[in-house]
Image (cartoon, rainbow, N blue to C red):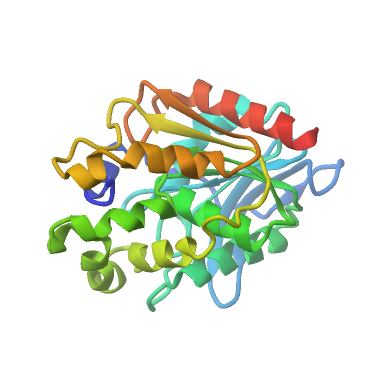
Length: 285
């Protein structure tokens, strides 16, 4: 279970270099929507989200950052090095969810459906057309899974970075009550920066188990912070098999272990970029 440690690690590992990024008017290039430089805020229905895109090529790569626990974090900056490796032959888009980074704050609880609707409206407002390869990190990987299941006509593939996955919810009951996803439900919505319940997102995702779209998916798992080893036999003995089963439901699904921590974007951008290229190539076949 990786719902506890990332709360601390995210603060120290997140990059904030994008804080100085100028909020410019989106500037289309001559080649059209899929060869477009975007840098700015876009209205998604009463609030604006920050989006930056560069490069050209289809499918477009969309980075979905992990959970943010520190208001000073600019989460899309975690993937700048990955974008720079890809944008010579791919259209790459990074954004910040509501309440974090360079996006605007909404004074309300965020439901999982809000996060998904925000992304759909953001891509539409910026003229970023499908198909997409979603690059989802940690909690962003769970949202990627939800988006792919609810918009199978838009998503051509996914690369998941040590992400949460719905099958792990079956083990929640074996944990002490205070360590369960559900135990953070209220505090996530009332007191954390994003104001979104991870437990609600997991419950929503669990409805799609066994009905995943037939798309290529590569899951990069952290070898430095591996799943299991928490001293709870029901979890430790079964979580890797559950992860393998999850990845195996995609077509094709590939699980790779990488020598990196849970928040791996700043540490292995080359490996991540290579995985994205591989999934994009498979999606085009």
